[in-house]
Image (cartoon, rainbow, N blue to C red; front, top):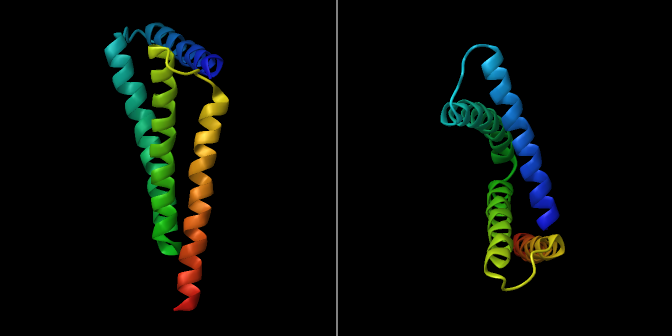
Length: 124
């Protein structure tokens, strides 16, 4: 897990430096805060458009699908936060396998929930 976070941090730093150099080469001389404003703003709006299109399509099929994706994203953030907290406090090991098993637990319980929901729907 630690290695994965370090790798992601390196990738983010590489893009940060690239965008900073690009802004300087165009003569914009953006500060770090301005760079964050533009990059996160642009990435965020692209993400919003993608998610909006996806969720509108899913809404025609199933609200449960939207609920699942939203909850999955919350679980992923929570699992990452727990692993980081374990590293900071030294209470437990920060491992990718811990995170993977945590998400697998969520998915297993979701399968059970969906099966029960399907059975109830069939019975009705």
